[in-house]
Image (tube, rainbow, N blue to C red; front, side, top):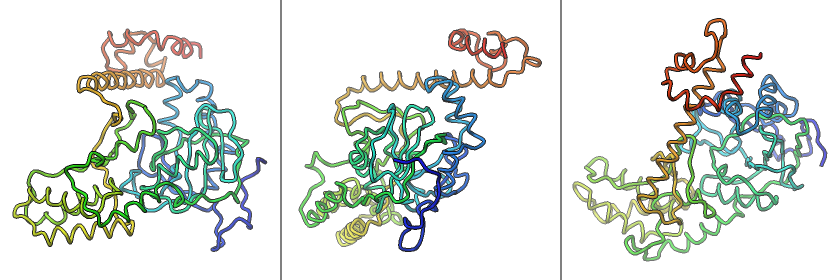
Length: 408
């Protein structure tokens, strides 16, 4: 495959004479800033990656430090801009703010030296660390419901092992630099309707009139946690809290909010359980009705169920991500409450230690030898406001970096 400049090829434009390079994506000031900074074209993004821009010096520094270093993490999360290629968002990047798909799918591949040739690859380039690859593929009919299936099937089609934690609609990629960036404007478009999700939708249509019950089905999905796991990974820890769909039934629902609440809850269970039909939703509706004051009539419940079913058929229902989680446990793995608490305490402790390291690093990075004097445990304590015992505990981790700063 040839590595060429990012120049539009008129023969690769669509029926409206539009080049895929003109597609716009959202950009962000840094990885820890979910608010949209601006919207730019794919061509601008690829040009910056291939030829470099003002951020190039930081990218090269990050690679020198190595991805396991604190300095690398600081550059990655706080300094370099990021992009989200999968969907367009309004104001902030989260699933509830998605306005439309971009027509592209971003895939993240770690720890590889090369990517196999594929007619589906629109662009590929070395990642920030220089030890992996970022890949863009043109896609059609991508949405939240078929996203993860599409992500995995495209990866299989190309012949790569992807980072499953990056299989998120909101996944961002850090600006990188790769003069050997590859791009093929005429790459083949992947039709998402060909993924396994279409089989789920077909099964759902066949089950619309079945007599499911709410109480006797162990296959009922009460949340979307299982969608994060495709193997036997026991649990996932997120750097930032992740919003999941975990609908609940309020203890009391009063007049004025009954129909809206019923529709909201039923629509979420309809999306979580694509193979469950109207019988299942009616049973759930009757259960929810126990908490209604006054009760809804059967006619009102059936009308809401019909509305939800029609919304699912027309793909107009939206999943609502209502609960934040820092740690998700694989539903297929059986943990006792004590085991879960031990894991939570251990992982949250590691997160806190990471924050402590980050705070010390920031202080050292901003150190002014004229104003702050020599770098000592006591002076860092005064600079950070941390206790001396905390600084002593982390001192050896920063000793070489302090020596480096003192030699500059």
